Image (cartoon, rainbow, N blue to C red):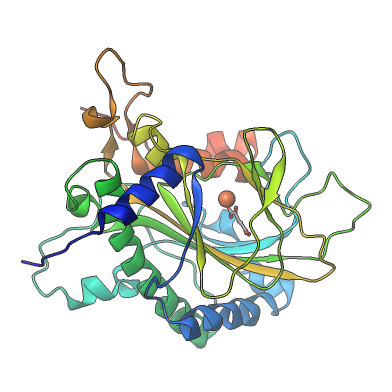
Length: 323
Ligand SMILES: O=C(O)CCC(=O)C(=O)O
Ligand SMILES: [Fe+2]
């Protein structure tokens, strides 16, 4: 058995950040700088193709919304204009998971969820290799962070291990055009909270990410070399009965330069049922949320900003019944 010890100071710092801010930076995280640098080259390789080629893997061709999102087709903030970015999304597959490849026991079966399904890869052979290198390292980091989050919630480090064997982990490559400064209404991504449990974000060189403070002002979270920005998403806020907070953020790229970023959205196996954790419900308090199935929750949230109402109805997504 693996023996892991965690510094109490680290766990306390983490709890403080997750309960008061919902955003923090991490360094000495174990993902080699060269791997992070390379994912930006991989993203550029993909985005530099012509639109017709990229549209061959348009996300509407995928029943689970994987693939390419052209600029102006996603509206994250329903009250604002469409987002000014183009993106590529891919989800978990055992090929991308170095731990799975090393695991010869084959004890863990993939989650039974309609959200579990194939990725849409471009034909460029180097692309998947580049994505796999980054995905594998950042997934390993996410599983380490899961143990720290468990400790910060007062649980045993291994508490979540059995539900992150085939996690709902989505890697997103993003390219934002240089925005017109005279159009303050347009945003790279409208104000939103993230859907999954937490996000590990690699930023390119351009500062554009902004976080909403309690006083209502936006504060920048600029790229810091060698670090990732980590933030709590809605699923962990729900799971922890709002002990951890999921904070609103947006992207406004007025740097005059194109900007790249690579968020990795991490959640549990898609068949996991998220009941607010009993240990997070203090005496006299109640669960603030109904249970949800992770895969259903992610699909509904993604579809909301990506499909028109009619399309969403046509693409009936099978709901999992909670026993
Ligand atoms: O590009 C960024 O810095 C943040 C992206 C983001 O918030 C998201 O994709 O949810
Ligand atoms: Fe986000």
